Length: 369
Ligand SMILES: [Zn+2]
Ligand SMILES: [Zn+2]
Image (tube, rainbow, N blue to C red; front, side):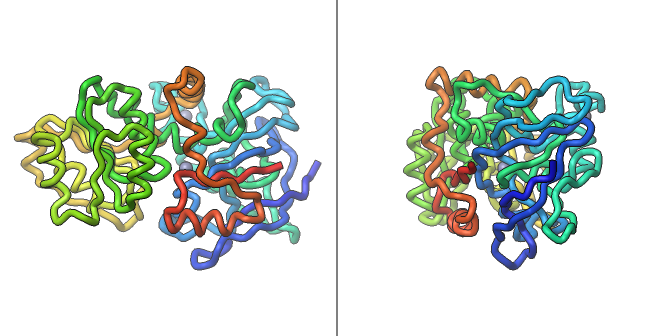
């Protein structure tokens, strides 16, 4: 059946997000409809709404959601009504060269469908029947959402829906950059630039992997206090430094083994790369604007054997990694509850995005239902 539900919609790049009643179609072949219970407010939603990431509007936001399956389309065998699930903002076809070689975060199908379901379908319309795009094949900042099963991961019953939602983007992206992309070795020295929703998770990823020194760099003392809670052993407020790279090299005794850029700015990428010791690896996690670029001294690649690489979605294999992260949470080694610094009802979404713009949260969480 068609459902009339509330959803958070981006209509124009220069306007606040709106909370609207929309229509959600029932699932078609290979799809499921989910009653959403929680959805994190991620910086990428903001970038899509403001146009930093160019996207066709209007579009239903949300790609960090958790809920319960209420309807299953034909051909879906791995999911059933009543299953607790989270969204994956990359769909995984299971057949392309990337899926086949263990890199589903780079799935060709996902790359083609960033504002519709993977088959190009749209199951969301406004009350006049005009189609609404969905962010990253999800659009889960809504009371109900119809997703392709390739974007849905079943989760256990013993972790709260809010914590499950967190794992599906911010935690996977930050922790995954450390343990999947960089494969940080125990005893290493790490620097994390940016202590927001993703950066805090990179910091705790470094702690889980056994880094001996974790330096957090941010422009906000409040964020740096949170960074300590998540495992930072040292903090640097970039606004207090004339030369951040020089300070970091001195603090780390010559440079870090790993640096994680969780801001999405070419100038910070250059700092991350610059703060490495010989043989070090800089990992770009933040999502930069399409016109942003960076500059490094080319000869340093050769003479110092440094690595500059990127990490998309924490190099996630969601069906393998989400349960793995939940095991770490159950074991008391992964902080999730501490990430949620403010909860909002759906009608408060404009405030949630304003708070995100001004860096007032580690993670804001929209509680649905
Ligand atoms: Zn996200
Ligand atoms: Zn694929």
